[in-house]
Image (cartoon, rainbow, N blue to C red; front, side):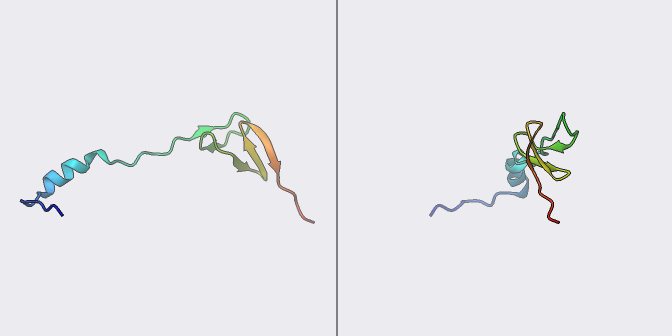
Length: 63
């Protein structure tokens, strides 16, 4: 296996790692409910599953 001939300093190591950044999630606002959610994902709001602003599933209430 290859081994480094010289020690790589902390500064050089950190310069190489500057491009790895965490990016925040992009949320969108649903026009129907006003709820923030991830784009292209279904989401629950008040017992209903919404996708593209339309109700897909309504949760049944057991008596």
